[in-house]
Every structure is written in C-alpha cells, then in structure tokens.
Amino acid sequence: DIQMTQSPSSLSASVGDKVTITCRASRSITNYLNWYQQRPGKAPKLLIYSVSTLQSGVPSRFSGSGSGTDFTLTIISLQPEDFATYYCQQSYSSWTFGQGTVVEVK
Amino acid sequence: QVHLEQSGAEVREPGASVKVSCKASGYTFITYGFSWVRQAPGQGLEWMGWINSNTGSTNYAPTLQDRFSLTTDTATKTAYMELRSLISDDTAVYFCARTDASGNSDPFDFWGQGTLVTVSP
Image (cartoon, rainbow over all chains, first blue to last red; front, side):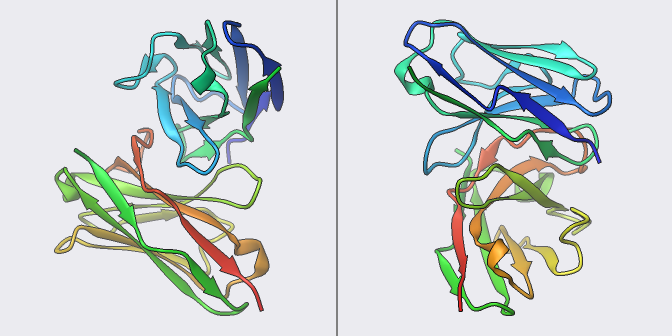
C-alpha cells in the first residue's frame, strides 16, 4: 500500500497570507496526486487533480506542484472561505488519503 | 448537473449490518464508478472500496473486504454500500463519490452529502 504523509498537521494563518502544504508519498506516484478541501460538516471538494490541474470553478489562488513522491499545495492570498482542512490523495494504486492539514485562523 | 443523494442516518447495534444508498443523477450512470470513503468523528478520510457501475467489478480496501460489499442498480442509478458485523470503530460518516469506471487513476469529482452511521449498544 502507498502511504501519504502531509505536513504540517495544522497551521495558523491570516487572511491575505500565502499558505503551503506538503504531501509525501511512500513511493513514486508519478503525477497521480489530487487535493481536496473539506469544510466542517461538509463533504470533501476536489480542488486539484493530476498534481496541478484546477478543477472547474476552483479559484486561481490555489495551485499545485511536484512529481514522484513530493508535492505541494499553495494558496496565495488566503480568503476567509479557505479556512478548512486539506487532504492530498494518491490515485496511482487504488486510492489513499493523507491525514489532513487544518488551516485555522491566526 | 451531477448530484449524489445519500440515504439518511442509521443507528445499529454491534454485530448488526447497515446498507447505505447513493442515488445518482445528472450524468450517464454506467460510464462512471463509485468509491466509498468514511470519516470517523474528528478523523481523516479513509478509502473503503470502488465499484464499476456497469460491470459490478470491485476493489476493496484489504482491511475491510471480509465484511464489506458494494453493489449498484443500473435501473435506479443507485449505488449501495453494505458493512456487516459492525463494531464501535465503524461509527463514522460514510461518503459515496463518483470516479472513473476503470478503477484507475481518476480523482473523486463529485461527492454525496454523507451518511452518519452510529454503532452503539
């Protein structure tokens, strides 16, 4: 099984900040890496797939990068609606999620 | 527009079974598959399994496959998840999510609203 490790587990930020979340796979997943946002009490929402492709309707302040085993989600100019939990997911071999990163208000 | 509507909350005793439904609309049902994901209270997301909506081919997470099964009904465009021999650790919100029909590589682009299953004596 492929394990996914996110860091940090949580972070505090302010509106307007740039936020970076990293995700590491236990072995190469080439570009089969997706990112989701989950607000409390809601279903996850697909933000980015295949490392860097924004899902339709997702604001351009979200971006993704990386390849192989190391990946990054970046949010530039954090907005109030961006305070949420973010999960990476590998889809190279079945599917596995990272443990999540909580972005909270500083 | 794509919509996945899940059945309502369930309460079961330990050892019982539960079956959750996920009714799809807004797209051609048999050209996609479903994954099921669960989330225990305050915890992260756990992938449980996948099913091809047309052929019924499945792929289950190893930790669950002995007491877990997925089915679909193409006539009603509904996917089902059944979990048997329930234990307290199965208390979670269960989500269905649309994904590709091949069982490989695609993300989960649409999700149901979630169904809370509570296992309690």
